[in-house]
Image 1 (cartoon, helix red, strand yellow):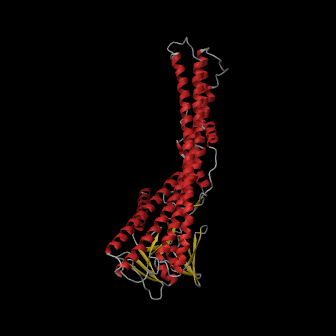
Image 2: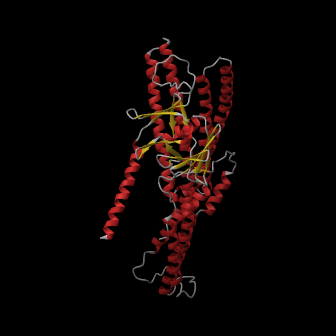
Image 3: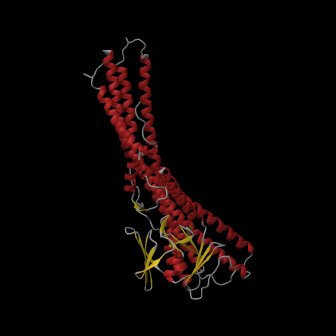
Length: 509
């Protein structure tokens, strides 16, 4: 009966937990600070009837400086003479060392610290309005409490960005590539299986070798010949098991590198998509102002609105892709799907210099797949050497000769595949380097244009939108360059060990 009660209680607790999580993810809340519509990598949520907002995004928009202590899991915010401290998971905050009771405990979701909305007014004295119908939070610390709605048709000058995007993220942890590899190997069932296979093949080889007294030079005693061929096969199986484990680990190293670098690229995609939204909102505001002053028609406003909608969809997709990239890497390294962390290793560009012909020779020499094929050739030749013509029902000698030919052809085919892979990867790296050089050349012009736009803006010869778009071109090119460097970094690993692209070698049969 007690077990039943415990089970029911556990079910209720789990149900409550899932319900709270579902509630926390169900809200689609809009935040406006001093008339500026906000975009956050982790949007506000409603949890247990309390609205939680991202602390850094809100507080920095209100002029506060925010610092994060990852070891102590503590946030410190300061503005003027006020200092605020909060600990993750606590319902108690401190303002100038005096305790402040929170409506709900602080928490981290998708790498950002969330705090109860009311704490904003408690700590910084800002005016906070929550509209349940439109699910909109309006926050203001301006003297006149004036706000500007993106949908209003005001003809006032465009004085401030329409949208501010917050990229800074609080992470539960950080992760280097080296640590990710260690975690993946430790969590890999393929590695565990490979280790067992080595142990198993070693025991079988030891057992089959007990009755081997000599190495036959030619066909002789049929039983002895058969025993030696069996031992040769088990010896190959043992060596192949060790080679396959080595290749399994190399494959894991490459897979982690690929997923790690793709995650970096997805993070860049989210940042760029958010910037494109801000660009679209600025253009929409300009179109509205021009229409209000009869300088354009409704058509231009409609086009700008459609572009904003498309950019918002692109950001939503980029965020989903980023979440998927986290889940993919987490699955390999044994982390929970929802776990988020900072990636510490970002590839740095350096020109790739290597002699492809030398690399081809090195790969053909060190490849486990080729080693296995060559060992099978040796086994086929051993069977031919120990062929006993007097044994009834034997495979015809000519057929045994063809087995040698087949094994040799297979070895040659493997060599050709690896050679082709090395050359293809080399050419792909060089093609990406060419793209990188083109982007760097374009960046020089883009940065010069951005500097000129800023100078023209300072003397009233350029608009804020023109300055923003010039800077956006610079940022776009920089992130494109980063993505190329990341792709090159992944290819460099495959270049030295192209067999990692084909998975581990199959065991000897």
